Length: 150
Image 1: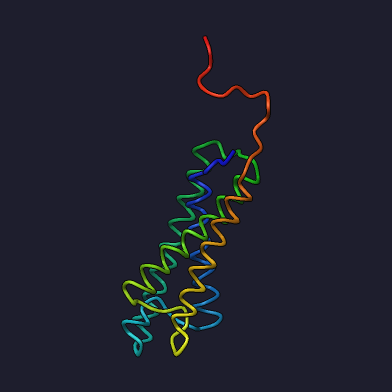
Image 2 (image 1 turned 90 degrees about the vertical axis):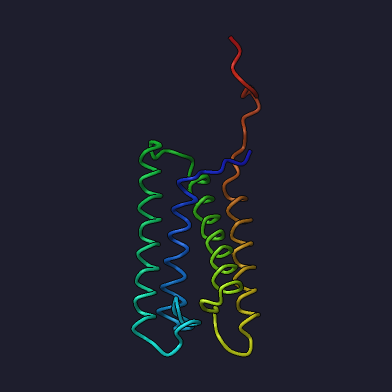
């Protein structure tokens, strides 16, 4: 049985964004949030990256609040499956909107930028599939299906 956990998914969206920002923006320096629109303005790009990280922090805080509101207890597979799937959803949404449709930035600008952008989307799809696989919960055979009988 597949159990989609909204709190874990939101947490994964924020964590995926942080990983993107930390690794690709800061450590590798391949792009900044607005480098496709403002390639020669480091100040605007720094502000864009800061606002992006603020959004990631808000998503992580919302995910934690949703976990807390729901009692915070769930099977580890459901939690981590949702986080991995959420990271994949982040890649798919961010890659489609910012890389392909709006041109806000590309994963890595240059002659192979489309290959990098498509690779980012493939990674996102693989993360969603992995998250679903991780989050699968085996349903006990003696658990009734449907509404409880009275």
